[in-house]
Length: 325
Ligand code: AVJ
Image (tube, rainbow, N blue to C red):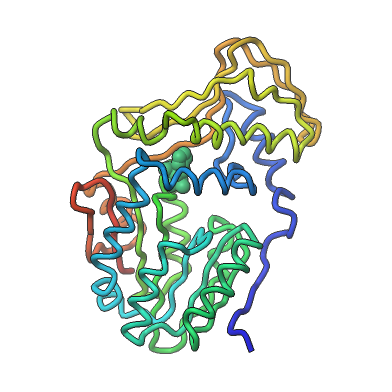
């Protein structure tokens, strides 16, 4: 018998429901923006995977190196027996952490949470085989909406929520506060959060990480328009836009945009929307916030978390923070 259980909290159709609301809200007002969640259809997920292997894109390797060096330590300090992973995807990097848990004989349950049902099911089966005796309770859901559905602690046990890759940087500062607050509400005292955040660094390296010469990141960001064409019957001309990766020095975030090079008239029938873009007008497709240790501590403290360990890789490019409620 397989030790996998899957709970489905979102509609099986990837783009159903909130895509329309998100597009109405984001493209129905100015400045124009699209939530980054919609970058990850099958093609987007494939392109993102390619990004993580680009030499310029340092965060994946940096985070992996911290996990490789410190996972055993994190496991011991957390005292957790359940690991919940938000936005788990293939749970690739998480294996290092789960191996350390399993090696310490501590892992009872793994709860991967992701919106991509098929990726999640495949990962859950593989993980269940790799860790026999561990209950894999996958949740197909949106981690910004479904935190209250996480499985409860058994008496005397603790959970650790892991949120890796720097994905929290996709959220605006007020969204981050709401997310961390909701997470704190769904956890018990003693539960921990392991949070990956990319760190502020010289602008040339930041921009290079989002502007690879082979144009993979360009295709990834541009794919958002292809998603709207396919899912909502829109008629965006993908070639009429230029990819613009900006470093916003004031807000300390990468700001990834698509700029219309000439006036564009676009219809989005599925969202009952008509757009008139002026030449030079931009759509913000993703932000990727960069952090400083002090800011990480402050934002976590505001939600009620206390930082236990703030670990960085050797060059100080990326941070993994273990915080306890
Ligand atoms: C998956 C959100 C962490 O912000 O670096 C990479 C996404 N976008 N290149 C990031 C991304 C363009 C990535 N996160």
